[in-house]
Amino acid sequence: MEPILKVTDLSKSFSRAGKNEFFAVDHVSFEVMPGEILGIVGESGSGKSTIAKLITRQIDATTGTIEIDGQDITKLTGRQLIPVYAKVQMVFQTPAGSFDPRRTLGDGICESLRNKGISKVEREAKARGLLEQCGLSSEFLERYPHQVSGGQCQRAAIARALMCDPRILIFDEATSALDVTVQKQIIELLQQLQREKKLAYLFICHNLALVQQFCDKVLVLYDGKIVEYGLPDDVILYPQSEYARRLVDAIF
Amino acid sequence: MAVLLDYQHVEISFNGNAVVHDVSFQLHPGEILGLVGESGSGKSTLVKAAMGLLGSSGMVTRGDIWFEGKNLPDLSDNEMRHICGEKIGMIFQDCGASLSPIRTIGEQIMESMAAHRKVDVAAAKATAMELFDKLHFKDGERVWNSYPFELSGGMNQRAGIAIAMLMNPVILMADEPTSALDVAVQRQVVEEMLNVRKVFGTAIIIVTHDIGVVSAMADSILVLQEGHVMEYGKAKDVLENPQNAYTKKLLSAVPRLRRERL
Image (cartoon, rainbow over all chains, first blue to last red; front, top):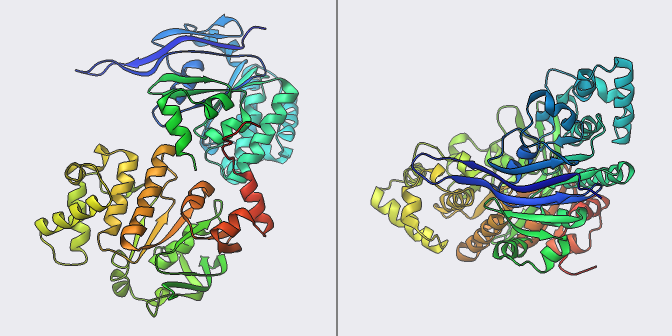
């Protein structure tokens, strides 16, 4: 089986006046197989979100390559990226902030299909179906982001990400801003969707306990470098790096 | 044992709508009480009510909050000034943001001491250094001379705790003091607060949604949901043997690190 996402020797550096180059992401390599859940953990500033931005091409890599479904996307630009975004979608930390406050959730959810020229009837039917799968009734299409709770908004954001039938979803701290009982519901939803649609997830999270419960593999980042990469139980029970050991010890 | 702070049937309303209903609890000297609940449960509001921080739209509409023989919601601003900061200290979620960005920590320490009593720089600095020492700050001199942006998030939080402890208050209110911090730094701040209690005997009310933090600190726990008390008791009892359906649901939703193979 071919990996759905393959990252090889990926770096992002920033040059600083009078100082050495700063590597936010420092030569990392990993892959995600179809249907696999890979967790990325690390403290603030370790480069977790930069990796997500590199993979979704919001910023350009300094070195290395990113392959999605066998295609090298590292240097693609503009229109060339449109078919790539049909395969990779992202869910953000603050759901309300990821929707346009002046437009309904339905507008936001349907936008990708509208851009593809799919008819209103068709795209709304699909949105209703996905909202229902995500545990929301179709009346949420008419709601504005400020009219729904954080958990409901995150469900809508997941439905939005699923509209173009992606193969891999990237979650950047997607449950961190939610209450624990809501977080649990969202995780259950993600598990169910993963089973039904054979989706792969890249799950960026600072909560090691959640990663242990939810992910097939985990990657620990420190100062932009991979310090651990393996099965969650191996990493948590037998951490090899000093940093991972400290991280595990610090958890209450 | 003497009761330090006594909430009796407290109801708090914003613009006439009650958001906290009939909450009663007692804080004893040296006790650490955890107020636990999800967003909107009223946990911060309860603490703010004692500090007079409800703003113009909020007020205590029923019940009393007794401290040293006085009902806090009845006091004038002038009387509150002698209690807030001096007898009841407070720290917030992001101390870096509640400190002034254009003054050094030292200048802000001076300012907050001068608000309560006459001090000169040398005496203030001596007091602060002694306090920094008790709180095991590695380089107190550097902290004193630093601007908040020159310190890490965790160090700002510890500086915030130090500033709150300057007047040696009998109660420290901590509103989500660890929520904005990385895990390893969270532990440092929790240990800092435990150290404060050990050294000064301060009673602490910690408001948090983080069950891990309360289980590491609290002697007693009060669980809130939508402004109602769900459960109140010894920390061990509430965490290990919850009686209330909501408490059970909350505790079971918390992901816990498994340190053994299944």
